[in-house]
Image (cartoon, rainbow, N blue to C red):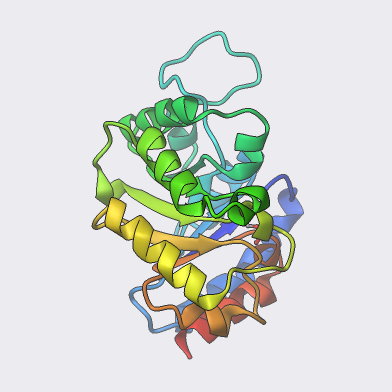
Amino acid sequence: MYFIANWKMFGGLNSLNSLHKVNKFLKFLKKKSAKIIYCPPSTLIRPMSKKLKKSKIEVGAQNCHEHESYGAFTGSINSIMLKNVGAKYVIIGHSENRQAGETDKLINLKVKSALKSGLKVIFCIGETLKQKRKKRTKQVLNKQIKLGLNKINNHKKILIAYEPVWSIGTGLIPKRNELLQTITSIKSIKRNFKVLYGGSVNPKNINELKSINNIDGFLIGGASQDPNKFIDIIKKTYN
Ligand code: PGA
């Protein structure tokens, strides 16, 4: 099971103190299958990976530029630079970035560049509320996967994170059956790919979510900033 913390644009150096508690908890967690990955803002990747040198927690980034070589792109960071400061993973295609203008084509280039640099990719897909209401979820996800992962078959290096846009930060999650079906359908397009769920995962709904047995893990935003909530989610998943 994957537990991926997405800190978004939150956190300064003092936020790293919260890792101590999570680390301590993980020392006693006798679950070899538990993979814990923190994706802080880029400014914290280096100090976080230094701090986590001896920990089982791995560090990832939240986005990257599509060029894996250096270039005149003011304000951008590429996958090589992320790897250089300790990132092992990178989130690509998050709906917050899709909404800000990232196209499937650009996302595809980013995935390719990240893989080339040796990063693993957390590839996000998800439908909006409008698309869900029009019963277009399957069609939307198929397209995002087809275009975003065009000419990419590296299933061991990619995790797909299904995050319905309407569930991110809202407290809402899909109905059990809907989620089960959607995950099954994603897995039928991309066989052997691990598929995570993300969107308002918290200690209150984790029992319901974990009962959907084809989910391979969770991408956790808001609740991951609080070490107690994050620990609680992991604990409850294994209880
Ligand atoms: P949330 O965010 O858990 O705060 O809904 C999830 C995400 O955006 O990855």
